[in-house]
Amino acid sequence: MKIGIILGDQLSLHLPTLGALDPDQDRLVMAELRDEATYVKHHQQKIVLIFSAMRHFAHDLEQAGWRVDYYRYGEHDFSDFASLIAGRYRDAEEIVVTQCGEYRLQHAINQDWQARSGVSIRCLDDSRFLCSPDFFQKWASGKKQLRMEFFYREMRRHTGLLMEGDEPVGGQWNFDSNNRQPYKGKTPLPPALTFERDDIDEDVLALVKEEFADHIGTLEQFQWGTTSAQAQQALDHFIEHRLPHFGDYQDAMLTGKGNTGEDTLFHSLLSPYINLGLLDPMAVCQAAEQAYFSGDAPLNAVEGFIRQIIGWREYVRGIYWLLMPDYAAENRLGNDRPLPAYYWTGETKMHCMAECFRNTIDHAYAHHIQRLMVTGNFALLLGVLPEAICQWYLEVYADAFDWVELPNTLGMVMHADGGYLGSKPYAASGSYINRMSDYCKHCQYNVKTASESESCPFNSLYWHFIHRHRKQFAGNHRMKMIYGNLNRMDTAKVDAILARAESLLADPDAL
Image (cartoon, rainbow, N blue to C red; front, side, top):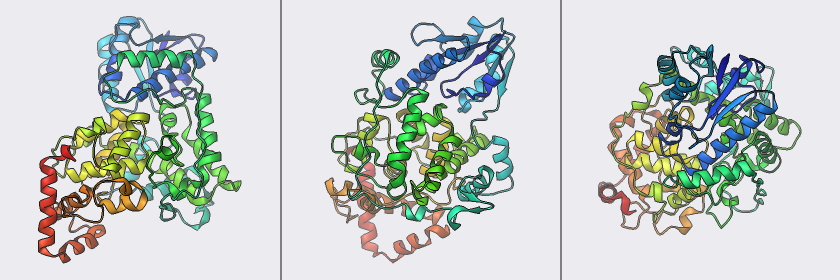
């Protein structure tokens, strides 16, 4: 008898593991393991989402005719898969598993499982992604620097999405310049989508409240779907209510007023379901594409959404498997500061940061601009150790798995890879946040100044960052204008800004 291991982010009936086994002869194994739940202190809602989705998927497998051995957290003594296999499945003919999403666990699959159990291990390629590691390696071969835009065009041709023959629909590949409108309230926010909780959900919520109370987050506002049917509901809701305005407002941010409408705006909230396997990425893209062809959503929205999936999502996964494990240790800017305490408590006088932290703590969610241009940008300006901010992102977000989180954070947010993933650092002053949100209107700091005692910390730290990294970036053609502006500044003004920044760097926890 063969044993198929189903991991927590492989909740798909199209998983290669299932195709390699016979439901009449073989068994499937799923397990809630201490090592996987605690190797970083995952957000409480993230653990609820994964455990409950796993339990629901196990039921789906049984309904489909599979025999499933399911190990619930706290009801067994196995801390990891190797000990589980060695303890229960030494007599198996073979262990079959699909490649996982994390180098740490994949290394254990390749090196530890068979060595500790004596059972032969067969690891299959994960066909749920649209770009295999081999495809990406061939595309990246010989390139000194990679650019997502060119990879994205290759993926458009590869998938046929939004294509007319060999040309892009609408005559251009990328409509990102159309997708930077601040939200002014004229367009009604989409209705909220809520799910009824069943006994499985309630059991898992009680378990996590008891066992993981010291992890970041709260459970009172847990709103994620936990079944494939609910994930499909979320997709349908996005296509109908959110996608039509997603493009215009995908970079906008808004202060919360007591409901999640301001926290999520028109974003899809689909990445957790795609990353867990509850939604197929190609099917999600095709649904968005159909909305364009049916006249239900504009091209800038549909193209921007599809780009996030077949562009960025596949791009960062390709980089992850191409460069790991050395990639995780990159720190080209030599940053070494710890994360300030407010990344966990949310208690800071910077209103933009406080809003993003509140959203994160309450919902295990923040959209890409909140992550990149607020909490991430601040960590970059502050000079935080890349490992520290990477671990924080992995802990706090429901959609965070190492293959997607690490390249986005280390490469895009922290520019720690020397520009391999992105051609310039995403450093910005408070003016960008002010342009794309209402945050600065509610903040005690002044977004218009950089050198005074009440100046926005983003402003002061931005110019300090530009000044201290002149050697690395002055020759970057995309930053030529920035250094030109710095060179034209009055020397006394520069000195005052740097002095203000140094005072902030001396005690960032006080902000």
